Length: 277
Image 1 (cartoon, rainbow, N blue to C red):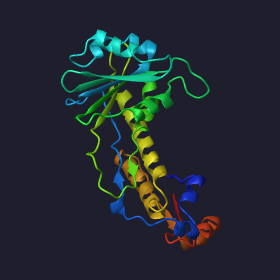
Image 2: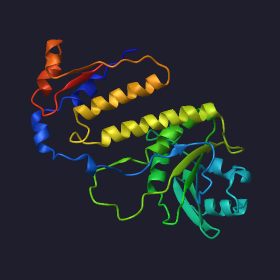
Image 3: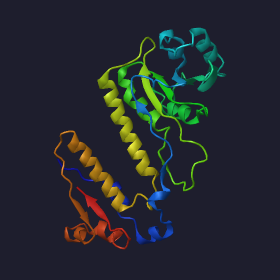
């Protein structure tokens, strides 16, 4: 099996020398993870004490009380939902018990040219804006769906709220955020199909990888690092039983093989240009 990087990606593999002079070199020790992408699993973490429910008003209103966390009754959930002002998107949070938090994120009922029927942009915005209490041990996010086929798109939307790249060199002033688990349910029951979660997890992992690569500046995601990402992707496919081979053309080999345009653009860079096939 053979793959070639798209033409737009080839430009990333061959930044000019002038571009490299404008970017401050960054050592690998300066790069740290900003947050950990959520896990896509059917069950909430056993130590979760922050519970978030995401859905349209009609979904939230009709959700079975059996899906609420222990110690939370239907009246508390409905009161929290009704406290969200307006008719569009909005959120509300309350303390339940000694150290547990319940949040409801209402998605807009109407759709427009600015969002999709699944309101994926609103899911990302709601989870991005949600604050995590300092006493949180783990976070459970449950997204209401109309059909299992909705899960992959919503898993990608949720993952976008957790960017994993940061260039801060100083030590963080606060501990890292607690782990987050995302699960799905209909109004009547949770979804637990392994196939549904396998597809959603694969989609979410792909978004997280693309997000990290795009967020990384060329001084970090240089040609060698990008080649390594391609080789790592091939390795993961081989681990799944596919026969994927990788051929890398770099530097003068590009000119010799007839890739004069790619070679000419990147030949003056400190990191030689490359084509991965």
